[in-house]
Every structure is written in structure tokens, then in C-alpha cells.
Image 1 (cartoon, rainbow, N blue to C red):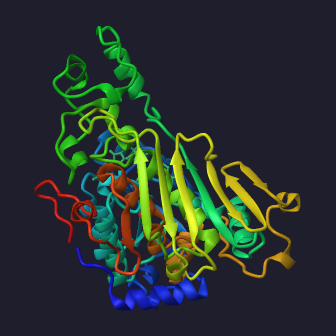
Image 2 (cartoon, rainbow, N blue to C red):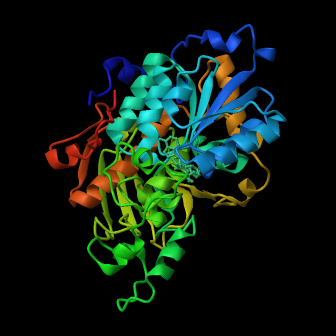
Image 3 (cartoon, rainbow, N blue to C red):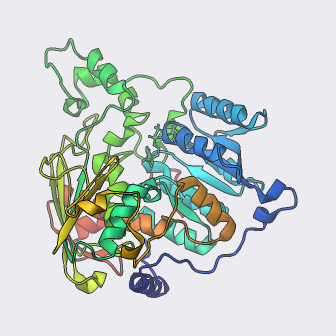
Length: 471
Ligand SMILES: NC(=O)c1ccc[n+]([C@@H]2O[C@H](COP(=O)([O-])OP(=O)(O)OC[C@H]3O[C@@H](n4cnc5c(N)ncnc54)[C@H](O)[C@@H]3O)[C@@H](O)[C@H]2O)c1
């Protein structure tokens, strides 16, 4: 995979220096101002309508700037539910349904798309959307591997599309206030950041519980699906035919074909490294994104990453690390910050509190969904900092989906553009690589390469199952 160009490096340096989010001049897709659009409304397609997809779509449906006019899913049940929801909201019967995302993306009358497919599909759908010059609201993490993320970043730049990461925490006042406190130097010079993420294998779909009930009568008394491996009675009891509504072959897509097991499809695909990245990669695009924002590290990264985690057997039903700790060093020569900063990113370590905590030379701030605390009690009051403390003002968005639509029209960067999503997830990807190899990873932030470690470097990408290829 090609690494970033010098143009991008220069641009990155400029962005780091200014601390601002800007974009290269963008070409307006002619369709946005098309003759037939009432009030220049943005026509939207939605791809991946399981859990987050419908949530995002409901927000878009409530916004008059756009009209959701097409949906795509490889599960015909999910697709029908999506079409019904969209038609109900639009009070119409004209929402188009697609099984193949490439057909939806080929439609000239669609300006932008929302993508909420499982992580192993992000790169293929995202790059094809860019190639088709659709603006994208794309879910986090940017992709399954760093090489795939680089391909998306390249495609976005080459095709000059607008991209909004689904890292919506930036569009909420509590995270904005915390990040502005840090960025304005109100806690002094930051020396350490603690990023606390969830642990275990959360049974989002409920299918984990169903699977454990299926194997409860076996003499082994299995407590967790990370104990179930191929060739055992438990495994054989869990393997079944896919439901008739699901095109399982396409659902697996570019990943390795595996026997169908209900408990690792809807939502719970996160706990299988073949399709997801465990709690670390599920959350890195949220809390590490905020940690970077506060420090102005949006386009920077760590120079060394050392991680360790509990690892179930790699062929188990759930094989992602349930408990992990990533230590990353952000060097001042790279970040341009006043000093080196230590990041700890952990799940299942009680001393690392869920959320983001920045610790500085003269104070600290902690923030999480629904929680805020700081060394200075005055900062706890109010939705935002008092104006006189806001010398540096971070980008403000009060609605993540509306911000995307505004930027589609204005051709200005969103609050969480693609490169920001790329950089916020890199510490998680490198942490995983360190966990698997057992090595400290030395990362060149500028060229985006792992130094002097062939085995680790190979893990920057992944093999695709035929016939899928990444352009
Ligand atoms: N921003 C957030 O807060 C947030 C929250 C949850 C999930 N997410 C992200 O959203 C994405 C989806 O997660 P989810 O929990 O909704 O998963 P899910 O399993 O509930 O839904 C995924 C949907 O995509 C469909 N799908 C799979 N492959 C497809 C393809 N090639 N073409 C079209 N449809 C396809 C599936 O059939 C399913 O309906 C993930 O990237 C996840 O990380 C983000």
C-alpha cells in the first residue's frame, strides 16, 4: 500500500501548526445544485441498516436539508424495515431498496450516503462511494486496518468528497467544553492522558445468551463464547445455516469465509477479529478522538506503542481481547507540543476510568458520556467555558448529521473529517498489532510506516477473499 505523499505531509504540518481543520479547495458536484431538487435538497442513500444505520437515518429524516431516498442492506428483513421506516417518515412510497451497495452508489440522483456496515466492509464501501463522488457520513472506526484507512483517505482526497466520521461525541457540548479547557492550556502542559474503554464481549444482539443456553447441557459448563473452538461439541451445536433473509456470503464479503454462527453476526460481529476489532477498536474512534482533539493532535500520532491484552484462542467464537492496555508515547518533536505525552488506552483496568482524562502540570479534566469532572470546580458549571477563557475556540457543531449536510453544501470540512478519523484510530490498530506480536511498535507518523519490524508491518493490511479487491 502506498504511503502518504509529500503534499499531504506539508498540508498536515500546516494543519498541525494552525490547529485548525481545513480542507483543500473542493469541486462542487453538479448534482447538488441540480435543476430538479427542491431548495437544493441533498438526496441521501443509506447503506447498512442494522443498528446504528437506522439511528443515523432517523436523524437525517428529521432534517429538512435532505431527503433519504434509497436504502441498502444484504439482509432483506433489515432492508424492508428500513424502507418502511423511511417511507413512513417521508409519507411516501418511493424509497428504493438495494441489495448491492455498488448499484446504489451508481445512481446519479444520489448526492451523499450514510454508511453503517460492519467494520470489515468499511474500506470497500467507503472507497467505492468516493470513486462515485458521493459525500459520506461514515461510521467509526474508519476501517479494519491502517492500510484500508489509507486507501479511504486517498480516495476522499482524490475525489474531493466531504466525509464526516460517525464520531459524534465532538458534536456534544460536554466533550467540546472538556477539549477546549485542555486546548486553552487551563490545566497547564499535559503529561498524561488516560483513555478508558469498555471490556469483555457485550452481548448487544442477545444472541450470545441464546448460544450459551444451547450449549448449557454440555459437561464442560462453558461460561463464555471465547471458550468455544472448532472441532468441539459446543462449536458444532452453534453452527447453523444462515437465516433465509441474509445473504451470508456477501455479508462476510472480503473477510475469511467461516461457518455461520448466529452469535457473531448482528452487532456481535465486533467480537470476532475476522469482522471487527473488539472493544478497543469499537471505542477508539470515540474517546481517542476526543483525547486528540483536546491536545490538537488530530493529525498526529504516537511514536511508540506497547500493548498487552488477554487473548482468547484465535479460532474461538469470540476471539477479541476482553482486557487490554495500550501505552503510547507522543513525542514533542512529532506533535509540536511542549512536551512528550504518555497515553494509556485501556479496557478492563479499574484504575483507568471510562472516558478521557487529561492530566496537566496545573490541573486535570475528565469527561465521559454523561459525566464531567475537573480539578477546578468552576469549570463544571455551564455548557461551555466562560467566553473570556475561550482564547482558542474549537469547531462547534450541535448536530453531527446536520453538520455533515451543511458541509456537503458549503464544501467546508466537517467537524470530524476523514483524516481526523484516520489518526484517532491508529493508536488502537497499533495497539492490536503490539498485542499480537508482543513487540513494542515504532511508528513513523509522517510516512505512516512501522519501523524495522516486518511481521508487524504485514499486519498493517489484510488479505481479501476472492473476488473482493481494494482499489
Ligand atoms: N457512532 C456510533 O456511536 C456507533 C454505534 C454503533 C455502531 N457504530 C458503527 O456502525 C457500524 C455498524 O454497526 P452496527 O452495530 O449497526 O452493526 P449491525 O450488525 O447491527 O448492522 C450492520 C448492517 O449492515 C448490513 N451489511 C453487512 N454487510 C453489508 C454490505 N456489504 N452491504 C450492505 N449492508 C451490509 C448488515 O446486514 C446489517 O444490517 C459499525 O462500523 C459500528 O462500529 C457506530
